[in-house]
Image (tube, rainbow, N blue to C red; front, top):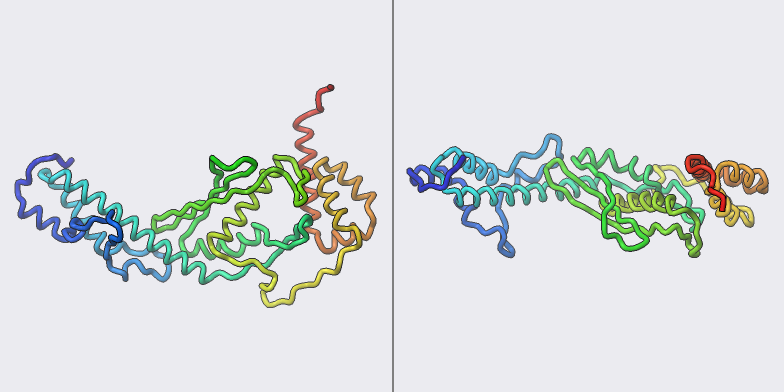
Length: 301
């Protein structure tokens, strides 16, 4: 282990430090300061295999290793060189991160919508569709994405965090606060707080991924095929569909009864054009039934 003593052979020590002398003199904390490295070493076209370390940083590491093996090394100087190496490595990794981010975005295209929001009467791309399009691209460029929830979110919201890590060693954190109060577009209660939290998580993950990769959503991306036109819904269908979603929160039995008593044209239109939404509604009803069974009967008043 290095000890703080006077160098017994200053000439030899200076020779060991020579490759990094120009780096030790620089104050990387100063405004506008930068570390000049070999640009060819930090500009990989692809990240497989990982890019080699910048030459100046590698030389600095070699000098530190030689200093560490010298029992007469100046500890303060050794620590200064180590801190300098950490900053240089972090900056190099950040540059590789953004080069790879740019390359990944160049390979991405718009994601077609695959879901329909019955409340707002608009189409959107589900998280599954976005993930299916983007994950093979960003993983090929050395990225990984993970999610978490954060503290200090405003009242009635959930803070969702996305961690984007790269094989080069750099990590970026993104966040978004999503309302989770269970309110619909008109301010009424449309779901329980538990369901609202799940919906907020899904919504936040979807929008964070879009923001990170700056990917567009649109029906014009149809993979070379013309989009299928959806005929107008029967009169009163929109309100019926919203009511059906509310009934699903009461369980499968209530949903089955509502479906059985619904006008046949409404049911046919739902199955023919919004089959995925119908399956989602049935799953929600099944979860509500399971939750009620687990909770047991309500105690008498």
